[in-house]
Length: 271
Image (cartoon, rainbow, N blue to C red):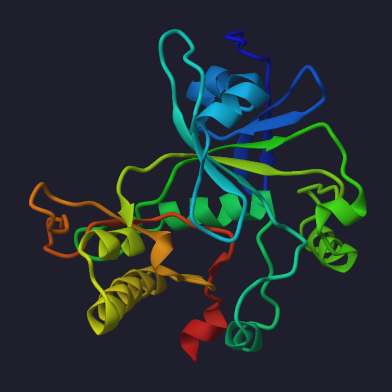
């Protein structure tokens, strides 16, 4: 365990400011402005050490490799985090209709993902102006070990496209990229349907309505998630089991999946 604050170098990638440091074993850590105050807790040895991670991780719902875990306490303080292995360069496991509608769809690279998320967080809508609640992006961790190409699951053609589009966000097809986010308390929409014991048409209607509401609010800000699902929406419950609402009386929620988050192009908005 380490509680020594590493030296870091400010870097700007895709317009986002990071604080970069190299771990003793040759890995790379990029702290965001949100993660920097928790730099000690986010050092890999304080959450990724094999025995600790195995004992404290909880696999979360979804097709990606994603876990909820907690860091070791540093100066008496632990941090609940979500860690997800980025799937840049991999094939999209989405339905045919989505692929036909968005033929150029691809997983965001780690730096793309945080860039577009930061843009979404900076956007405002409505009166009074409100932002889209999301998890806070804390860091990107690149472990030092290199994978064989067949182990990575990535396609060279897709990685080449990413590098050509964003050369400053240097990517290595052999390296893993782990995104670290802050944990948000609550239940996803599917879990709420389970808690309410909804089945059949009432369940489908609740999930459809909830997802459509978040999708519409996102679109008003000029963004979308290509594979939007009920599991991407976190809700909170009152003590009586009803849904918490905002001050305007509408649903209180947070968006928690950004692998396929993107801006809607100006041409699409006009059309």
